[in-house]
Amino acid sequence: MNSNADDSGAEILANPTELAVAPPNVPRHVAIIMDGNGRWALGRGLSRTEGHRRGMEAVRTAVETSRELGVSYLTLFSFSSENWSRPPLEVQFLFGLLRLFIQRDLAELHRNGVRVTVIGDRVRLTSDIRSLLDKAETLTRDNKGLRLVIAFNYGARDEITRAVRRIGEDVAAGRLSPDAIDEAAIQSRLDTAGMPDPDLIIRTSGEMRLSNFLLWQAAYAELVFVPAFWPDFDRAAYLQAVEEYARRVRRFGGVAARRSG
Ligand code: IPE
Ligand code: IPE
Ligand code: MG
Image 1: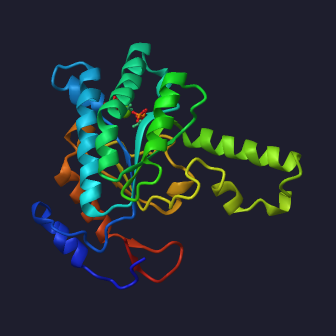
Image 2: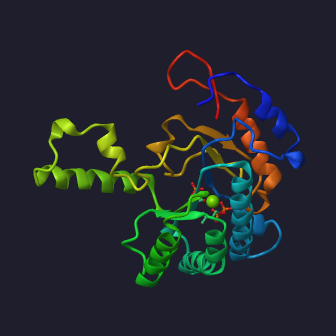
């Protein structure tokens, strides 16, 4: 945590096209709610699925920009536990896109030292998708570069519920005393165990809600809502969001002003 108020990060980012080095106020963990694919497409007379297809391009840009900035963790909300309520064909298409992304991009991610982790409930996923996700995690397990966290079939309430169920099992089996249930006990049973909380949560498409994303982990995240639909979220838009983050003053409940980063 950078305790010296320091504007240099914001200055470097003020001219996004000339960003050459990682500024000091870059968030360690960026999490993105990639929203607005459908509206992006409908506004162009295209099908919603075309919007999702273009959204995959924006994913590649976000990964590249994260690496360029020196972000350590990038969490992407790809499919929520509530997205099952969409028309079956759209759900099927989104599953196909995940499959395609891993098949097409995994080798390059691996070459670039990216470590892939998937969070969310895998039980309801078909075994072919599950093994694809396992393969991506296993192949990249020892990579030391960007940690790309894909939230798929993820919902924060579901994640917390599963963690609480595990705590109940541990208590019932005598492995855990109720007195020992503290924040760390909960945290270590979440899908994000071992990861730092997000510093910056970005949501595209102008909606200002979390839609069941990282509710526990977002306790002190800085929230940045951007009007652009996800397929239009390019490098410049990402840098602008980080610039906004770099201007925020984080207090974590205290009084001493601490700059972001
Ligand atoms: C985000 O775009 C992608 C997913 C939620 C899977 P949407 O599909 O939600 O697009 P809008 O919000 O309907 O425009
Ligand atoms: C959130 O977007 C989920 C993902 C981006 C995967 P939604 O489009 O599902 O959220 P709501 O329904 O507008 O809240
Ligand atoms: Mg949406």
